[in-house]
Each structure stands twice: as structure tokens, then as C-alpha cells.
Amino acid sequence: MQDILNPNIEYRNSKQIQNWSCGLPTLRAGPQSRILKCSKQKINQEYQAFSVSIIWILVIRNCFGFRASDFEFLTPCSMLHAPCLKPLLYGMLENTFIHLPHIGPRTEIDLWRRGILSWDDLELHLKDWPENTERRRLITRQLHESINSRGQAAYFYNLLPSSERWRLYRDFQDRCGFLDIETTGISSYDHEITVIGLYDGLQTHHFINGENLEEFENAVEDYDLLITFNGSRFDLPFLTSFFPNLRFRQAHIDLLHVARRLGYRGGLKRIEPLFGIFRDSEIQEMSGYEAVVLWHEHLGGSPDALPTLLKYNEADVVNLKTIMEIAWEQLQQELENEVGRLLPFNLVNGKS
Picture 1: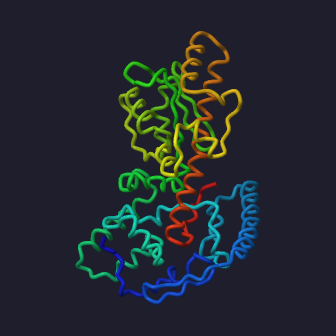
Picture 2: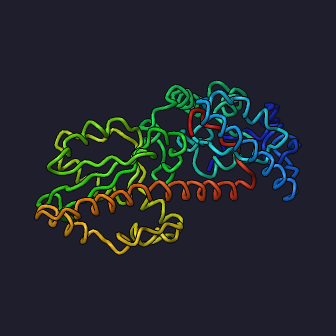
Picture 3: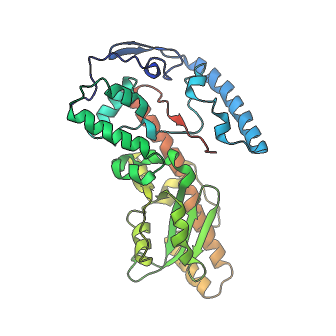
């Protein structure tokens, strides 16, 4: 592997010299550096004080309708008195380099270790390269495209390796839909969709066969990112077969593969307890087979069948969010462990 870092450059970018890794300045001498580490007690004390401040800010915001952007003073630069702390709301897309040409997982880790932590840092670093190198031109061009494509989930979805698409979640969580379908069988050729559940993080929207199922096609266009469990093989192909004009333009995270990467095996109901999720007793033992039975009971006139089926489907989509949140944290922690430092992922303005 060719390292894109230039070992002869001494990094003088202030963002690289004063960083978040421990609450004290990083001492650098060329590419070699030492990171002075905080004591665990200091981190805990600062975290407690900072958490109380954040809670009061959120209370004021909810009561008086302030936006997250009204609190822009809570940025990494203004938090140098407690730089060990990770923000409550943060994304990592602008700290990601793995979608750029000539940058693989090992090179990305090396960049972070050397204090090149954001697209701005990398842009400054590339200016020290010889201008006539093809690698510099390719990386710079793709980097500028990335900067201009902020807010376009599909753009980064097509560039990121499939194993790293989980990184999209925090940056697009306000335009994210958690999706699950109920059907009369496994094959889309001789079975049909009975219920579609779409959860936006606050409210579940149901689309029911015979009532409003056709409205799903327009409703799903409001989302830039879809999250499913085994949706790559089941939900999305079934939907495109059922709706001939439907073409998913959204980015997609399949939590089945994310969970397997973390060592969780089995279907959604099997892994939910491993994430601390327990369903209501009424639907706790239900499976896809019972969902089919409930639909036929609904068609037969049972007044309780459809509400129970909708409750079952709602648990599916709501629980996807919990799993996504926990999995994101675990995968981000894996990166930090490999890098050997806390990564200063950015506050995501406007999220709540």
C-alpha cells in the first residue's frame, strides 16, 4: 500500500496542533507525535459538568423553540476546556476519507492518527504535494466534489464501500426512514404486500393494502436514507416488484449486515434482546407466520387482527432505530480503538 501522507511535511495546521484527543495540546515533531492523555477522573468530571449544561440548554430550547444552530458556540473550538468530550449529536461524514481515490482503510486510519481529521485538514495537506502528481489531482477533485455534495446521501452511498455505509446515519438522521413490510408470503411473484411501516424517528406511518397502500410510493420520496433489516434481499426487491414505477433513489443501510459485522447473528427478533429491546407480551412471540395469519383474520372480519398486526409492524420499524443508534456507536468506538484516540466528529446542526 502506498501511503498518501508525505513523511517530510511538518503539520502546522492549528486544528492538528490543538486537537480533541485528550484535553491537552498534542506535541508534534514532523509526522511523529505524542499525545498527552487525560486521566480518567478528569474526563469523568468534565463529562458530568458538560452534561448538566447540555441538559439545561435542551430544556430551554424545547420550551422556547430555539434551534440547535442557535447554540453554535458549542463547537469543538469553544469546548477546549473539555475537549475529551464527544458531543451528544455528531456525524462523521466530513471526517471520512475512505470514499476518495487511493485511500483505503489503512490510509484513512493513518491520516486520523497524524491529525488530519477533516476534509479541510486534508485539503490543506494536499497543497503541500507536488502539483503535477496524478494522485493529488484525483484526490483533490473528488474531495471538492464531496464538499459540494454535502447533504446528498445518495452521492456518498455510491462511493462508500458497502461495509462503511453505516457512517451515513448521523449526518442524515433527520431525513431517514426506517422501513419494514408485511406480506402474505416470501415470493413477490405469487404473494402481495399487506402492510408497509415507515418510521421517521418520531412517528410511524402505515400503508395498508386495500386502504392507502398506493400512497407509499410518494411518501417514501421524502426520505434520503432508508434503513431496513434484510431489506436488500427482501423488502426493497419486493417493493419494486409490487410498485412497477418505484425506483429507490435513496441511500440504504441494511442492519442485517451491520449487526453481523458486530457479531450479532440471527433475525431481527432474535437479536433485539441483545440490544436491550423487549417487546410487549401481546406481540413478543409473534413471527412472520403469525403476521400472515393476522392478515387473513382481518380479511375475515376480525376487529382485533389489524390493530395487532400494525402494532407488530410498528415494533419492527421503531426497534430498527434503537439498533441503528447502538450499532453506530459501537462501530465508531471500534474506529477510535484502532486509531488510538477520540475522533472529533462534528456537531450536526439542526438535529434534536
